[in-house]
Image 1: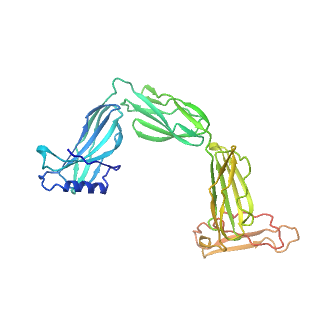
Image 2: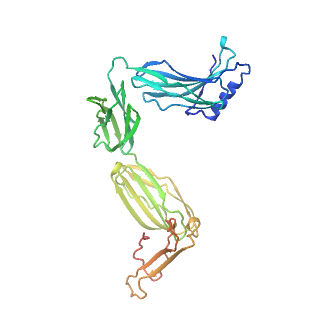
Image 3: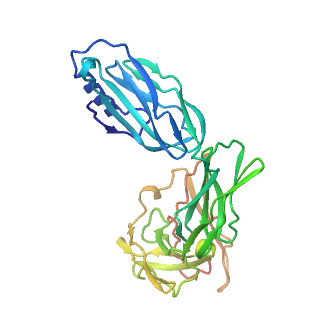
Length: 410
């Protein structure tokens, strides 16, 4: 018997795979007519928990296979490898009969009991073929009791990193069981159900909150009046990863216009020293620096810089050097393009009106005067994102000192 094997990740055969099968089957011209048929069998039909078995779908008497649809996932077994496609060419006394196409799945048995698989549905030569249900008997692994196995992936993380806690029942069957996670208070920031991969497996997602090496208590499985426990696990949590991010917060920048630049340092609570101003004062005027910080996930420190562009051209911000936790980190360079005048999305819709109204028309020297600016629109409901971030610029007030500039109202 000669076999040609090809790998596929799909339940339904891809077109390239179908073409290959068609060529192989059509290559034999002197074959006996054969009625299309399909069968499925397990090899071996009886296995024990933890052992592997194959499910083979064999299609005969067809020239072209268009699709093969598998049944619902097997809860009592786990895929061990991808399906393998092969062609069986008869020899000896069977020579001259049509080739057969075999699709082989390999599983690992995980739960004891008698299970029924199927049917598989195949579309070949425009006809729909269907297998009979397949019975598979999975015996217990010797005389061992039910076992709960737990694992952590990955078992080494950093503060603020996510990891998975998974528990699996081996040696069932169990029907009305419940998975109970351990108490990880103080070790993780959160522990959330991630879902069931099968009837015998459950996972939780967690985020490490504390540095150190921890013993994770057992996962419990309750089935009626019986309780099973996994073995304790070890989780190693290292210091927080330090991540430095820098970005522009403006869509359009021009000479005289204002724009924002933000710096975020994750994994630290404080900086060892204040970073240098990102831009020289002949390129942009520094208007304001805003500081922020919080302690979750190992800490985070932020700096928000507001600038007014002074010169047109292409510039590069950074790399900025950040000193934190006794180490030095660098940001990736950020490109800055300053135009002479607003362009592109900075052009407002035609039905917008900008107004400026002084609070009073007469004032004494050193007396504050409030000037209010507003964006007005008519029947237009969708103003888009106006005013666009970075598109506002204030006029020059000759003879006045600007005491305060408040942001746009809602």
